[in-house]
Amino acid sequence: MEEKILARHPDKGKQGVRISRAKYDQMRAAIVATLRAHGAITFTELARLVNIRLRGKFEGSITWYVTTVKLDLEARNVIRRVPKTNPPQLRLA
Image (cartoon, rainbow, N blue to C red; front, side, top):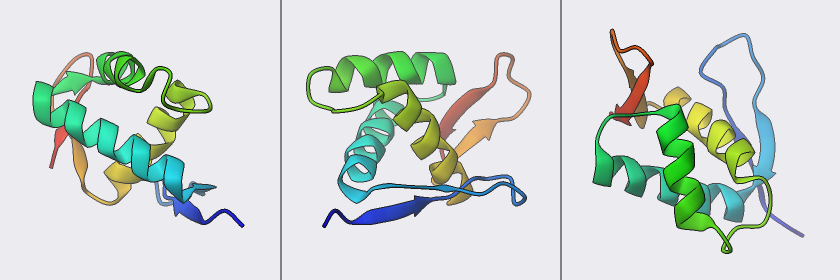
């Protein structure tokens, strides 16, 4: 049976979702590596770069998983939104 993880949401009133631990770990590694390589970037750019990195190596909607894992990483203070940026940018905490 596949192991699942509860991906949190940074807004306390919103509920997280259960996703595959293997997909979470793969997506987390791709997001962290992308932010480490590029510094502060927009969500759109993050999704584009992760899509390039994982194309053909990931089963499922890459954009959906980027969104879900990004929210979880914000909730866990692994990544942060850069204040006063428009459009909003993300960076490692």
